[in-house]
Amino acid sequence: MTRINLLPWRETHRVEKNKEFYVVLGFCMALAAGVGFAGFKFAEDKVNFQTKRNDRLNNEIALLQEELKEIKELEETKNNLLARMEIIQQLQGQRPQIVHTFHEIATRLPDGIFLTAMKQQGGEQLVLQGRAESNARVSALMRRMDRSDYFTKPRLDVIESDKEDGISTFKLSVVQDKPKTEQESDNGI
Image (cartoon, rainbow, N blue to C red; front, top):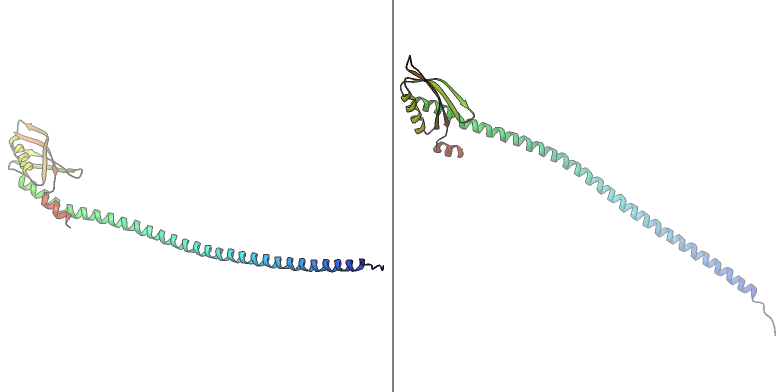
């Protein structure tokens, strides 16, 4: 029987297979590195795109906050102006009241009474001081004030009689009130 030595052929085949394995391994590593690099670039592009969007949104938010500040300042200015307008309207509404007050006092004052002082306390109370020929005239003044549309709740604080002259000094307080017809017309302005 002849003997054939197959050892070199096997070794050559094994070396070729090893080379082929290393070539495929290198190709797979290169392919994996390429896919990894492409994935990294894709993720980096997405992050850069989102960063640009975030920066744009932050800029828009800053602009809106500045506009909100301006709006708040305008609201404060508007509220201040409305408060001033309300005060002016109240003053305009009270303007004819002083005329009515003096007219009512002049028409309600009976003969024999002389006012020496008139003082407004608070927003509605009016204090009248004066001299009268008798206590009956002060009583008549109180009744007339009670019948008035502009005065309510007359109250006599002090009355003193001078026995020598027969003249009384008095201090009377009344509450100022607007008639209902005037209040309704003020609300319609």
